Image (cartoon, rainbow, N blue to C red; front, side, top):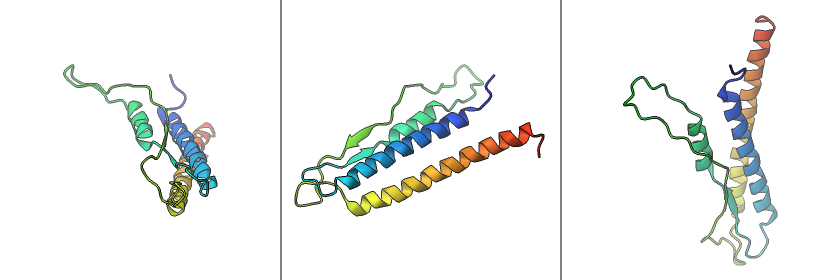
Length: 129
């Protein structure tokens, strides 16, 4: 029997993704003036597939198709084929700042959701008080 549902693990994976994304954005911003630096990005698709990997459907008939399971990782990819600056640099400052703001909102939402889960558990342990 599990004490916690897969929700906590999924939220933890989301926080890990958000943390990696924040580090990559910070690295891009730190190298905004570095000649020939190619901006990097974190693959959200892999994170989404990871969440789907943990999704389990109830099979009520043997003819139902089961969901596949594959091991997935958060990937950091270099953005190739784009140059925004005359020195070969591909960091778009406005885009990076927008992604940073979005990532901070995403991270905060995950933290609030985890806090809600733990507060629910605390409430149950205290007898609903």
